[in-house]
Amino acid sequence: MVKNKLFWKIFTSYIALLCLGLTLTGYFVSKVINGYYLSPLTRTLESDIKTIILYILLTFAITLVIGFVIMKINTSPLSNITQIAQNFARGNFARKAEIASSDEMGDLANAINIMGTELQSKMQTILDDKNRLDAIMANMNDAIITTDLQERIILINNAAKTMFGISSVTLNKDYLWEKLRNEKLCNLVREIILSSTKIGDKTQATRTSEIEIPSPEKKLLQTHLSPIQIDKNTYGILLVFHDITELRKLENTRREFVANVSHELRTPLASIKGYVETLLENNALRHEDTQDFLRIIMKHSQRLDNLIKDILELSKLDSHDLKIELNTMDIHPCIDNIFSQYKEHCAGKNQSLALDIAQHIPMIETNEYLLRQLLTNLLDNAIKYSHKGGRIDLKVAPMNKSIQFEISDTGIGIPQEHIPRIFERFYRVDPARSREMGGTGLGLAIVKHIVHLHHGSIKVESTVNAGSKFIITIPLQQPKYIA
Ligand SMILES: Nc1ncnc2c1ncn2[C@@H]1O[C@H](COP(=O)(O)OP(=O)(O)OP(=O)(O)O)[C@@H](O)[C@H]1O
Ligand SMILES: [Mg+2]
Image 1 (cartoon, rainbow, N blue to C red):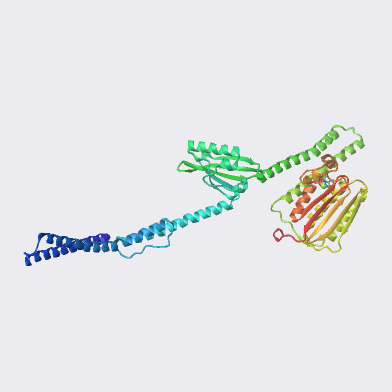
Image 2: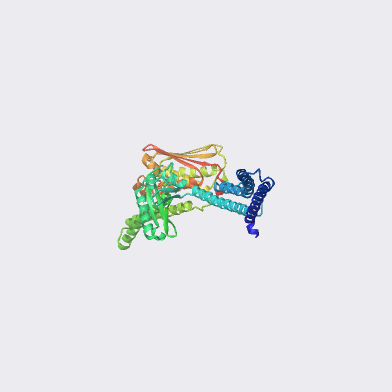
C-alpha cells in the first residue's frame, strides 16, 4: 500500500474530481427541473437547453481548473527530477533532487540522488585513474605509442615525441607511418596487426626488435610491439621503445676492451715463450746471447706486469661502488717529492724539468695516491714523448675554488685528429713506438678516471713537433656524498 502512495493520491483526486463533477451536474440539472416546476408556462425548450449547456460548460471549467491544479501539484517534483537527471548527464552533480514527500516521487528523488553520488564517485575514480595514467606516461623514460588497427595514433607519451622529434599529433587521426617514417617499424606493426587478427593469440603476435633512427639524434631502440586485446579481440597495437644506444656502446667498449687486453697480453707472452723455447732447445748458446734473451724476456715480463697493474687499476677506478678516501691536505710536500723523483729521471734522459708552484696553495680535498698517479702518468708521457734535451714544465696554481695543474713538454706533440681519442683505453698515436717504450696505452685512461672521480676537468693543447700541454683542474672540495 505504501509503495503505491502516488497511485492512490491520483486515484482519490480523480474520484474526488469525478464526484465534484457529478455533484455540480446534479445540482445544475435539479436547478433546471425546479425552475420548470415553478414556472412551466414561461419556459421554452430552447432556453432550457441553453441553460443546461451553460451549466455543463461551467462544470467542465471548474473541474478542469481543479484537475489542472491537482495534476500540477502531483507532477511538479517529476519535472524537478528530470532537470536534475539532465544536470547529471552534463556532469554537474552539485544540485540534488528535493525529497518533498514519502511517495513514489520521493523514492524516485532519493534514487536519483543516490545514483548521482555513485556516478560522481565512479567518474572521480575514472578521472583519478586517467590522471595517474597520464602522469605515469608523461614521466616514463621509455617511449610509448598505441595505434588502432588502421594504424592511427591513439596515444603517445612525451618521451616518444622527444625520441622521434614529433612536435604535434592529432590523436585518432594522424597515422603512425606519417609521424615515424621508419619502414622497418611500420612493416612490423602491419605484420602484428595481420597476425594478431588472424591468430587471436597475444603471445604469438608479440614481437621484439631493434630499430635504428637517424634523427633527431642517431639512436638504437629496442622495440617491443604487442597487440592490445580484450577477450581475444584485437583493438590496436602497443609499441614500447627503449633507448639502448648507450648500453650497446658500453657493450662494444667492453668487447673491444677484452679483445685489446687479449691482444696486448698475447704479444709479450708469445715473445717470452719463443725466447724460453730457444733457450731450452739450444744448450750450446753463447753466454752473451743467453743474457740478451733473458733481458728480452725480462722486458716483456715487465710489460706484462705493467699491463696487468694498469688493467687492475682501471677496473678499480671503473667500479661503480668505488669509495675513495679523501683527505684535506697541503699538496706542497707531495709535489716536491714527485718533482725531486722526476728531476733525476729527466737528468738521466738529458731532459730538464722545471717546477712552478704558487707559494700559497689552499688545502685540497683529495686522495694522495690517486693525485700522485695522475701526475706521474702525465709526467711519464711528457718524458717519454720528448726528445733528448727537451724541457718539461710542471705548474701548480690556485684558481677560483680549485687547483690547476699544467704539465707541458717540448716533445713530439699529438696530431689534432688524435687528441679526442687519446683518453680511450689502449689508444696510441703510434702503437709500435708506444709498445717499444713499454707503454700499455692505459695511462691517460687512468688519468681521465681520476679527474672524473675528483669532479675535475682536463684539457689538451698540442702542436706536432712543438710539444703538448695537459691542463687539469681539480676543485678544492668534493661533494660530500663520495667521502
Ligand atoms: N705528452 C705527450 N706527447 C705526445 N704524445 C702523447 C703524450 N701523452 C700521450 N701521448 C699519446 O697518447 C697515447 C696514449 O697515452 P697513454 O699514456 O694512455 O698511453 P702510453 O703512454 O702509450 O702507455 P702507458 O699506459 O704506459 O702510459 C700515447 O701512446 C701517445 O701516442
Ligand atoms: Mg702514458
